[in-house]
Image (tube, rainbow, N blue to C red; front, side):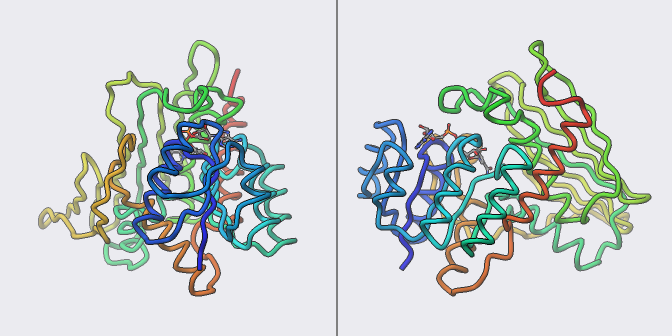
Length: 331
Ligand SMILES: NC(=O)c1ccc[n+]([C@@H]2O[C@H](COP(=O)([O-])OP(=O)(O)OC[C@H]3O[C@@H](n4cnc5c(N)ncnc54)[C@H](O)[C@@H]3O)[C@@H](O)[C@H]2O)c1
């Protein structure tokens, strides 16, 4: 039986806990430095709680650790978790530096731990549909494409960690990595990259645009997170194939051809579970898809093949390269 130990019960930890509960998988232990978060989790899930990750790792009777900590703490706890349990889930971005990524890969080789990373877009319905459409060849080859991820200022993180470039790696690592990772999944490794950024008054990146080159085809990805608090979060794409242009824009998936316009059916399982304070996503949606995949594979004794640690480290490396090309996260 899977027994989950969750470290970090903020925005994403609450989402993951709701997913496990919907999946009927017991959350045995939760650690959060905020006592009110521990109390909330204990009341909802009847789990044991700890006010730091180390105590959970030392004491709790769990066989899966799920790390939903601020990014700058991922590596420390993921290294310890791989020593303790056979399976670890790490939220994205997996780490902040190449060195951290390599240390995680080394530890996985030493321990044989199963690791999945929360690059959730590969399991997001509209994007799963797009990948399947591309792989099937039914619209021909991709000619060009654009991906967009726009957000208000992220004021919700614990102790302002998201807006601190040292702890979050800037919006490039925190947000744009989703599109970078998906572009790699869709088209493979880009042959060239060109990146341009805008910075705020303190010199940190708030807006990034990268052109991923694949010979004659280029995929463009734009990310920004400093819009006013009233600005609605949006993630969208428009991809032109030889025989159709497909767009997931304004909450609608559309296929445009010379003959007409279609709205394909693409939604997978709907959980109906709504997470209070769930930020821009209230339904469990793709988080449920990814944790269902993770736990189904573990239950079946099968290896994790989607959002593996090596794949996540490749996306980390690519975004770090983009940041370096642009002159660094802070200037
Ligand atoms: N996959 C996605 O779409 C997605 C979306 C949002 C966030 N994330 C990622 O999830 C991770 C967490 O982000 P978040 O938005 O939940 O942040 P958050 O600030 O809402 O939550 C982090 C929690 O960790 C707790 N914490 C901090 N240090 C701790 C420690 N040492 N031990 C125990 N608890 C500790 C804090 O009290 C807080 O409750 C980040 O890596 C972020 O990038 C992923």
